[in-house]
Length: 321
Ligand code: DP6
Image 1 (tube, rainbow, N blue to C red):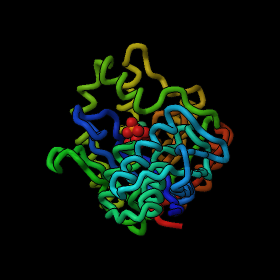
Image 2: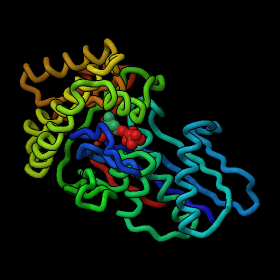
Image 3: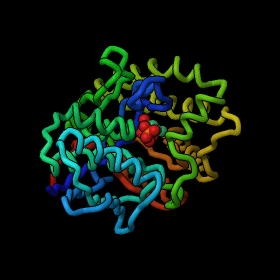
């Protein structure tokens, strides 16, 4: 009763930020992301009938508290489907900094669900895998699938949406230059930040009203392989989400000084004729969308302002190792 799965992180081009008021962690905004090769989590789940407790090890260190509780919730769901009570050992490792805004929860929960189901002998469709990953962390629903992936808000899908492939990873050889500002863990989790934004930001309802329009534009641009249209829409999605966060009370401010420096650098690149557009998640890091031919010069331009630069490309969905 042991299996290993590998899943890749994803970066949302149209952001999910906010939850609907229904059970099961259903997003309030439709999102569209690209799954990235090279930012991966490898997770082994071993159920043991003699085990006395669930153990979660991340990067060689045993983890307790809230992160472990979220892992156990997934294990419980799988145990219920499999009709077993065995405790499990979960061994997970990222090949990029954990909890740094580089969406390790997305690849982490996608890999966990896939490995746990396989280890327990439960056959799950990709849609069912994606739904289970969504309940753990909604962005993880998208990492179950490869390439360009959307996740809806569920109204017409019995409030239980699964991620869908908008276009496979072979559709568009886009580059994402990730400029990590710091390797420290972030301050406020997405889940907490979303709740705070909903409860205190006067811009929250405007964000919810606008997000589907930006999503439609991102989707159209991805299907048309139109980098400029995608870049403009993706930057709008990210900056409007951050405007909503910054308007919360007290303000939810994920930007650091280097975040602004990197944003300025991206604008300077554009002024020099390089097609580069930025997106930022619930952390200070700046991820830049560029054509493959420009990735080296953009990475070189961002490197002096970043703790680390990673160049990533569209990658596959979750798979057993
Ligand atoms: C800013 O998926 O981490 O990265 O469902 O509460 O676990 P939970 O939130 P999570 O939120 C991701 C937010 C985002 C945008 C995105 O990935 O769409």
